Image 1 (cartoon, rainbow, N blue to C red):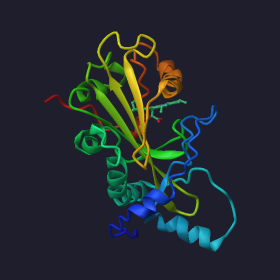
Image 2 (cartoon, protein in one colour; image 1 turned 30 degrees about the vertical axis):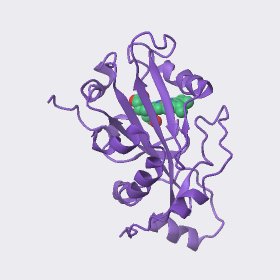
Image 3 (cartoon, rainbow, N blue to C red; image 1 turned 90 degrees about the vertical axis):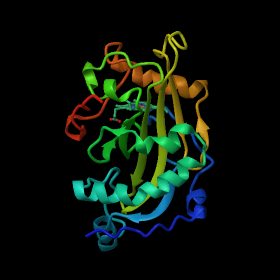
Length: 228
Ligand code: HEC
């Protein structure tokens, strides 16, 4: 049983928890952990467990069953929409209408301990949907990963939206023309040179053949998009 919070979208709740201390530290990739905004969404099982053994085990990334992942994302989605919209970034407004490549939100530790979904826009979705066989993505492709955090006590917070945009050939040889952005829950956009280096230093490990893309673990993938 899951309680779906009835859209209590108080902006104060979202603003409150956006720490000013966004530090990207090596070792904790995209360690924007402080930059999350709590919601009234919870995972009831974890809330009950935390109440039952107060102060007991600290678990970094709670394991959620599929129904919990679905309910959590349903509940937190409107909070995400409101939070990311503060940026006025085009992808923030549009990405939920793009093709989604994750069956449910899935735990992705590479971007900090959080649950994420992968989306690609119309220009990029055919190639992205072929995953490792997709080759070099076309100019104008935009990939977006929204994210939320589930605390050990079951409380769900909005975390950043990660965006990769394929720019014109020649824009950046070292990043295969990818432009990286992080849209914080308070609407701030992080895309300076250090962010470019930080994101690309990890993504380039995926290699040229995969166009620096990491895709997502097999069990979480939706099947290849049928062409339009
Ligand atoms: C330590 C490695 C690492 C760093 C740093 C990193 N990523 Fe990723 N990224 C991944 C992995 C691994 C995936 C595949 C899905 C997953 O497990 O999270 C991924 C997937 C993505 C995707 C979906 C496209 C794809 O590759 O399939 C986007 C968009 C993305 N990351 C954006 C960013 C941005 C923006 C930054 C910097 C703010 C960043 N990433 C930093 C490892 C990293």
